[in-house]
Length: 272
Image 1 (cartoon, rainbow, N blue to C red):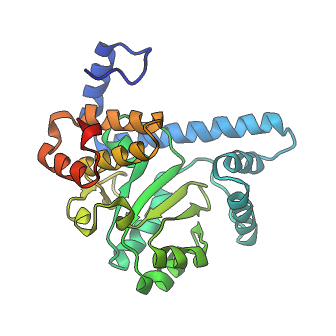
Image 2 (cartoon, one colour):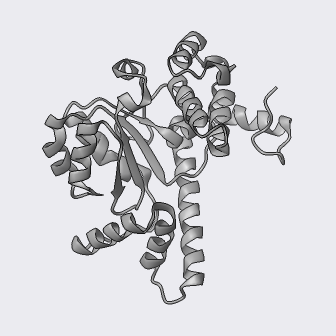
Image 3 (spheres, helix red, strand yellow):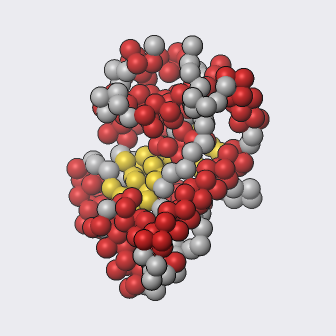
C-alpha cells in the first residue's frame, strides 16, 4: 500500500485530492503549477531583499536565481539582459517560456515533447519547478535556424548547443523575461529511442493557445524510475513525483507498455 505524499495528510484527504486532480482539465493543472512556481519566485526574491536591502526587485530576483542556477550561468544572464535591455517580468509565465521553443521545433520539423518535473506535475501531483524539460531530436542541420529563431527570447550559448548536438548531450536555455530554465535533452540519453515520439500526447495547456506535445505518462514514470535509480535511490523529489503520477493516473495507465519500457531501462524491480 502506498503512503500519502505528506505525513501530515490522511489517506482519505489524499484520495479526495486525487479525485479532484483527475477531474481538473490540463489547463487548470498547468495554471496551478505556474501559480506555485510564481509564489516560490516571489518568496525567494523577498528573502533576498531582506538579505540585500539596497537591491532592486530585479536584482533580488537575480540573486535568488543565482542560488538556483549557479553564479556562472547567472552572470551570463545578467550580461544578456543588460545587452538587450530586457525587462524581467513580474511573474514567471511557463507558456511564454515554452512557446518560442515549441514553435521553432514545429517550424523546423524537430520531434519534441515536454518531459521532466513539469510533465510529472501535469500527470500527477502538482509542485513548483523553475526548470522546464524538453526532449528534442535536434540534428546538426537544425543548428543555425534553431539558434536564429530563439536568440531574441533566451540566453542562448550557441557553441555549447552545437557541441551538445554533436555529442548528443543536454544543454540549457534561460528564458530572458521569466528567468525559467529550459533543459533540452536528446532522446538517446533517455534510452527510449526514436519510437518514444510515437507515444507522445497532445495537450492544450493554455486556453485558446496551440496544443503542445507531452511524453505519455508511462514514459514519464519509467524516466523517473531511471533517474531515481541513478540517484542511488536517494532523491526524494523524484520518488514524490513518481508516486504522484502513479496515484493520479491509476488504472488509466497502459500497464503492458509500462512494463515493456521499464524492462528496456532496467527498472522493472523498482516498478514492482
